[in-house]
Amino acid sequence: MDTIDRPVRGTHAVENQPPPLAGYDLAEHDTALLEGLRREGAGWDEDGLHALGTLAGSEEAIAWGFEANRYLPELRTHDRFGNRIDEVAFHPSWHRLLATAVEHGLHGAPWRDPGHGAHVARAARFFVWSQVESGHGCPVSMTYAAVPVLRRRPDLAALFEPVLTAPVYDPGLRPLRAKRGALCGMAMTEKQGGSDVRANTTRAEPFDGDTYALTGHKWFCSAPMSDAFLVLAQAPDGLTCFFLPRVLPDGTRNGFRIERLKDKLGNRSNASSEIELEHALALRIGDEGRGVATIIEMVNHTRLDCVSGSAALMRQALVQAAHHARHRRAFGGLLADQPLMENVLADLALESEAATTLMLRLAGALGRGGGDAREAAFARIAIALGKYWVCKRAVAHTGEAMECLGGNGYVEETIMPRLYREAPVNSIWEGSGNVNALDLLRALAKQPASREAYFAEVGLAAGVDAHLDRAVAALREELPEGATPPEGAARRIVERMSVVLQTSLLVRHAPSAVADAFCASRLGGEGGLAFGTLPDSADTRAILDRAWPA
Ligand SMILES: Cc1cc2nc3c(=O)[nH]c(=O)nc-3n(C[C@H](O)[C@H](O)[C@H](O)COP(=O)(O)OP(=O)(O)OC[C@H]3O[C@@H](n4cnc5c(N)ncnc54)[C@H](O)[C@@H]3O)c2cc1C
Image 1: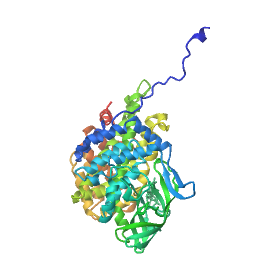
Image 2: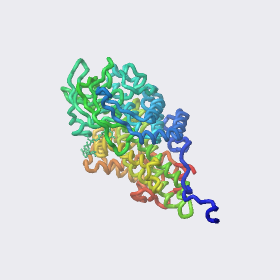
Image 3: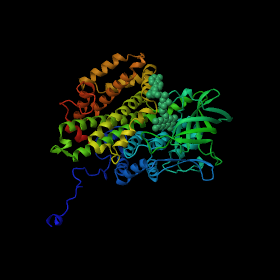
Image 4: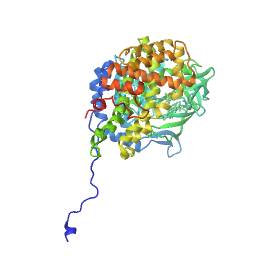
């Protein structure tokens, strides 16, 4: 019969779906990144950045990111005979991600080779590689940040810095001297307090010289398979910083037990644990009672990575959203050509560029800060500003970018849910929003040099945009020298200072389409609260074409 002979039409024609976004160099079309890299003195690493960007955009690496988050780390407390082993088993993709990060120096290159722009080059690489997967960035950042703390004890630094900065990924528990490469974690937070570490109860009893025996718990200890940890504990004269190896020099396991792994919202590829310390031997760094002052050396570095990690989330979210909208049709045209979608994407692009530009400026200041007091003062205040604001924006940004993909964006087969779930963590750790904002007010009041450095920096863009000039004048009025603003105003002030700083950077370094729209929408009262509310004057097409060329 006619009807039976006729070829059966499938009901499952796949139409109007974008092609997979793979096989590209993540750095290639990121103009803001490449311009900033050169401006901040790391243009020499362009080839290295493109090589890592190409790997990050490969199908293979994208698959590693998905697998590391699908097959989660598992805690193995005992072996089959009942011996404690306290090991975490990871999917091979986790190891590939981490090995790549280490081999590209993300955990320590600027310490091994502290040339001009070294921290900028490292931040740019971290930014590009984090776009594949964020969780493995945690041990990478902590190792990077631990080195300046370790240097407080030059004898310890001489022993351990070479292995902690070696571009070799060498997992497995062995004494540090037997390792070709090692990673370092940090254990400060306890059940009764994370922000207020003075409440720590872990005890440190003098054992032999500068070796102490630590007993207590830590409520959050990420990357517990690391080879060593910086730990805070109460010594006889108060809270003190220690370097605690997992394995002792004679090959025996230290008194470090992993109780359980956290079941987290995001950052799921990374194991975060609760640990118990029982007479764990550790070496003192800094004087007894100076624990916070000692460990604070790492804060600028971990906070910079919170900015870089959040900027990376935004960049990847934007690229995914723009790619989708450039291929998906609705109501007779491409989504990207619909004026309202173009407004949303351009607004997301502005936020992403502002974050990237600030990240590179901060990394430059951090690198130069060693020999330049003004840059050091600027880094002190601007990294805290960036940490507060860029991390906060990433949460809203990834949510809006997800919506650009419609229902597809809500599905785990895209990277969007992973970006969205990852976003809040950078704001929570290393000084949650309020703590970070209050810290900034203290810096303003007690370190006049950082206040001066801030106003000197934003002053470099004076006279170009009236909105910016007015905003700077208002800030100067609200923050007279030596004043301590009320605590309740901290977020408002910090937010304003951050946006003004970002605007000043864009006015100086970005094309006028970007700078003008950012000024008008963020400072001029011409934008709304959600993304996609740029004023009619905004050249949305030019903004989007710069961010992700068609
Ligand atoms: C995924 C993940 C990994 C982590 N990894 C580690 C790790 O490896 N090592 C480690 O030591 N810790 C780690 N942490 C812990 C993290 O650093 C702490 O959660 C964080 O410092 C906040 O401490 P808390 O949880 O005790 O909250 P609290 O200190 O109780 O703070 C709760 C809230 O109160 C606010 N707050 C605190 N004080 C004030 C104040 N004076 N005024 C106004 N508001 C205030 C805070 O901003 C926060 O919003 C991790 C956390 C997460 C989520």
